[in-house]
Image 1 (cartoon, rainbow, N blue to C red):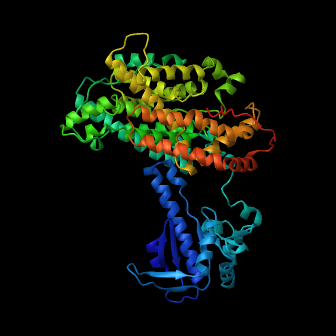
Image 2 (cartoon, rainbow, N blue to C red):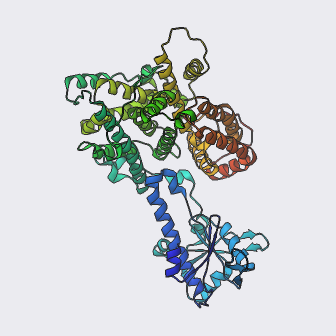
Image 3 (cartoon, helix red, strand yellow):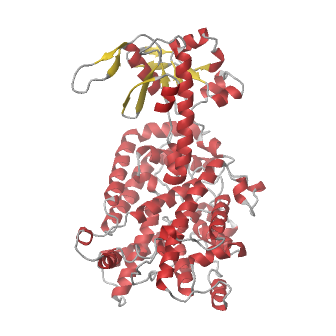
Length: 603
């Protein structure tokens, strides 16, 4: 912005919080000051959106949600340098205050103009640059004001000033409309799926590939250090194991109470970041991730963007698994610290294959999600409901589809990089199955099993059978992984309010769409406010507390719990107003009767 301001002869006054304050016509008067400022605003908006898009690849999918809002007003000001310890040039007066009101009452990705600025542009022959805002704004201390939108270069190229109907719709589109159609399944080329993906999905693919590639390099670095016998996938032993694993479509039967992780720490002999992956692996990884993106449906909530958000949350939590202070602050040698970290984190931190498997499971956990609950699929008599014996239908379907795709011959090098012996293959499969099926939070039988396992592992409740110390550690690791994916699947509830709002609205849109098409047995609008409070009290907040109780996530637990409590308070205060906005936006018909608080349908 500073470079652009200097080039366009715009004077930067200051930055205040998240606001960039600039002026033209000062300190030297300039006749065409409104034109200069409008060009500056357009360029800043373009630069900001370009940067946010680029950063999305490195910082994760939510970075693309960052937006800019601009307000411009014209008029006389008092300007001067205030004396004092920190003397600087400042502006004062009604013009400055009005510009702030114009900015705060604008919309994201829009440049908002006051009537005074619009008149100056009109006098300069730039009437085609503007569109009259159809609704007036009410500014503090100013009353009702008529304002205008400055058209972007793209809007000008599409034909000049907007009519009032288009102008009024300049706010973000309803989510159902904005997301459909997202991926053209009928025209998708599965041999080259990336070519058919929209730009935003391609950026998510880039980010996901980068995360998985880094973990693959760690797997290879550890494998090189171990110097154990490796198998090619064409080896009879590996061919037999690949053929046998996943042959039974009833995946739920594969869920295991204890996944055995490696019980030793391997000292790496090379920097994982400098590892060169075998030929073809990176290309196959990208092709696989693109295929997974293409296999997601165009749902407002359960889509590839959600899968990427869950994957980002899993990666964040894995990166924050920490050792206790006495380990980190001790005088032990590096090897001893690594061993202590291994023990404290139940072996999760010292096995990159475990981390890779959990991250990949997050990416595929909603493949082909139909946008309705498991209960609805069973009620409708869907074929997959019968195939999976009416248990965890959507989750089992996602595993089978993603696994079958991975087993295709074109991904052989990618698979051989993930696992290179039967034990690694077995562990990879178990982690994928347990992790994805843990996202079925509405099956009461599974809930009971998980609660009992948690009580045995962390609350020292007696169990019926004998258990070795190694089993106890692996049981804890298995449970921690399942709770990690559960927290990540609803991570939006434990993040900043605007992130929670974004995904909550999408889920409302998805369930409302299902209801209006006869695929949900209740109107979600009737119980949404109370349902969210119940969801926080009975699931989200207890889950955040469990993350803290397992003792491996450090300060992240406090961060997640604090956000959950804050969002719950915010929802209690604003939720009814928010739901009213949802209803106006998405519901064709609404009922005045107060409904129940059933939130099933999210999965």
